[in-house]
Structure formats: structure tokens, C-alpha cells
Length: 301
Image 1 (cartoon, helix red, strand yellow):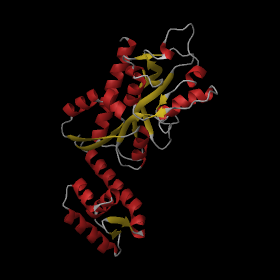
Image 2 (image 1 turned 135 degrees about the vertical axis):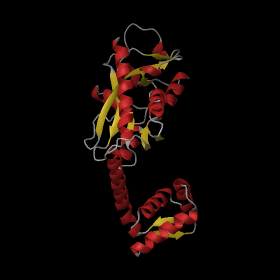
Image 3 (image 1 turned 135 degrees about the horizontal axis):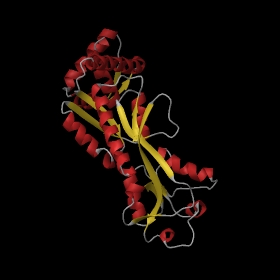
Image 4 (image 1 turned 180 degrees about the vertical axis):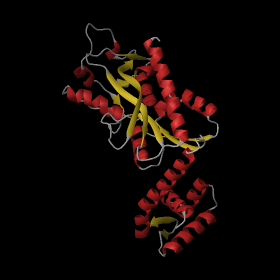
């Protein structure tokens, strides 16, 4: 069984198309078809059924798919171990990150890393933090820089980097933002329209847990996973929300609420069962450097 055939097989299975798989592999469609044919011949079984323009995995293909992923992951791991012997920092580095962290945290890190290690080809994938965790579990990315799961899954390793303070916000002309004699209560907030991150996100769950702990029912009138979109919707007066304090700029204002501060942790995540490449190790060093610089500036040192 050849490695190129397995890679072509997984590319077709993931793309659902020989032509799309060919583009991803930078090959011609006939070349991909030939690799699949050789693989099917070597295994003496058909891996795909072709019905019109659609393709489907056969039972044999379904059985091979998870084993092929495991075999290729082991091959990648072996290549990294061998390359690490001479401490070269090159090759491809796959990093998953959220849109928010990519926009607000990673730009200087990526700039420094690219200048320091020009031989590394960065492959940045922008996904929700929860999806990034899944990519790591499946060995489909080498590391992630995301919002950390507050429950901390045991099968992944966390490196906390930044504490993100979350604050309650509204537009400056919203009724909740008008001068008052006492801080708002969670009950008062829950009675007003609210726009929150989806409950499938770690940030949404952190906020929802605060209200659940206080036994205050909270029903979101709208939800989206993009914090920048939430800021826009709140800015035009459609409701209140919770965002990182670093995002509070006019027309948004921070609301005074009678509750303890809410925080989420941002950081790097790796799969400890996968050997880190030299490039990944160097990237983590740059991340640590910038996180420490920020912490020192906040402490006044």
C-alpha cells in the first residue's frame, strides 16, 4: 500500500469529488484517478461508488478511511521526529485559530515568526475554537491558538497565554446605558434583548453559566459566533451583550453590573500524542514571548 494512494483516497473522501481533490493536491484529475485505481488494485476492492456525478465510499472505503488517517498521521509523526534530529526549522506548519484571535492577537506573532523563520510555510486555518479542538484530536492541525475550553479536555495539552476580561456592553444611547443610582442586576439584564455568542461556543457557555449559577433565566434574542458581528449589532441598539474589554469602542460602552468579573482564557493547544515539529516549537516560543511582553506591560514593568 503506497502513501500517495492513501493521501489521494482521503482527499477524494473529504472533498467528495475527484476534481476538487486534484486541486487540493495540486495534481491533475487523471493523476488522482490513477492513484485511486492503483490503490484499489493493490487492495483488490473498490473504494468508491460513482453514481452520476456523485461519489460515495463503499463499505471497504468506510473501513479504510479511519485507518488511512491513522497511518498518515504516524508517517507525519515519524518525519517530524527525524527532522527534529538536526533542529532545522522549516517545512509546513498548520495552525488553527479563531477569527477574533487572528484579528486581535496573532498579527505581530505571525510577523515576527515569518521574519525569524522564513523557511517555514505557514498554513493558517480560521475556525471556531471548538472546531479547532476537533482538528487537533483528529491530528488535522499541529497546534491551535484559541479560546480554551473552561473544562480543559484531558486528551489535549493547554498552554494559557492571555486572560481575556469579558464585560457587559450596550450602545451609548441604549436604555441600559443611561445614568442610574445602582449597578444593573443580572435579572434586569435578562429582561432586555440580548445578543450572545452561540451556546455551542466556549464564550457563550461561560456567560450562560454565570446566569445559571445566579438562577436567572437567560434567553438570547440573537446569536452569532463572530464577536465583531455582535459588536456591530449591539452598536446599532439591537440589544446588550458580553465582549472582551479590548473591543469596547464607541458607540459601545461598558455597563456596570452587580456581579463578579467574567474571564475567559486564550492560549495554545496541542495534541500530546503528536510529536511537535521544530517549526511548531519555534512558534510556541514566539507566542510565549509576546504573551510575556503583554503581561509585563500590564504590570508596569
